[in-house]
Image 1 (spheres, one colour):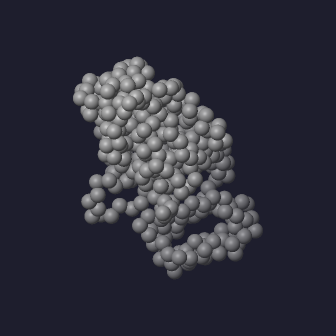
Image 2 (cartoon, helix red, strand yellow):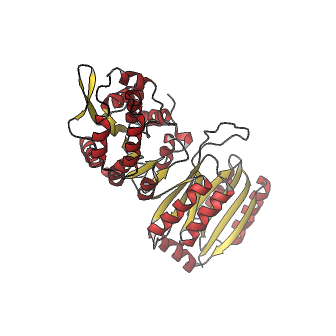
Image 3 (tube, rainbow, N blue to C red):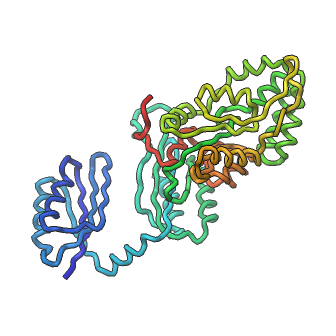
Length: 405
């Protein structure tokens, strides 16, 4: 009679342990139906689901495995598995699979408890939990640490919108970001990443910096805030703000560009994307002068932004050509993907304002980065606690995958 056994092995990890266990099973021609292993702080947890052949009784196999475990100083247990239980398990492999990423400066037990409780309430099963970030030293005083834990989930969501709402509701109080996405072939097969510029790649809004130089900082800043919150049409707000800059000396742009501050993690992110062969682009409602400055600094492939009209060395208060607004950003994303022969599912878009929502929705992976509340609520993914390089985690990369210069 066929016999199915679940073998669980725990104890100190050591070289050759798995091969010794496998050698015993091999001697009895045992098929391995499933296997999984994890090591935490040099402590091994290994599981194997095996089928004992009809011609082999389980007793000799178990005896040999127990003796091997004793010599290796590990613990081993055996659990019989009924045929119908195994058949149910096999039948579940067609269920949808998801990835939930928990991002924070440090991971706490409370964060894990709150997230896993929501997962359980929606009847999703946690198949695997893995750490994507590197180990954090105990005495690390760096406030810019990164921590990311990824849950592999299986099951059918009856109300995905409610699930996302409940996860979003706990992010601020716990100081975490939670990304939830379908586990599919495109996860680690993205090929292009496009970015908003102001308050995304850089920490400031360039037009506000220009306005300060022109002596109209407060007026322009108020209009900017309205536009970013989605309370004002972008084209109208841009026209009103740029008009305030009339007469400003063009040389001011050079000094502003020189003092622009890159967002935390930007250089690390672009260094990895470049070495991995990704195409990158700035799609911005800001201005081309500053976009090209960042293009040289970060080796960005494409820049599309608005061009300030200049006459006799002075800004005229007008913009040349077609305005790069929300609709134009989404259009440019599609055009760039087509030009590079890349599926939209293989694109990533990152932005913080309401005018970024169209491209965030169009990209395969849209990420609201340190965004306004209305944008965080509408975007499927959001990052607020970590730097731009946390985007790599959502694309499936681990810290150990980082390539050297």
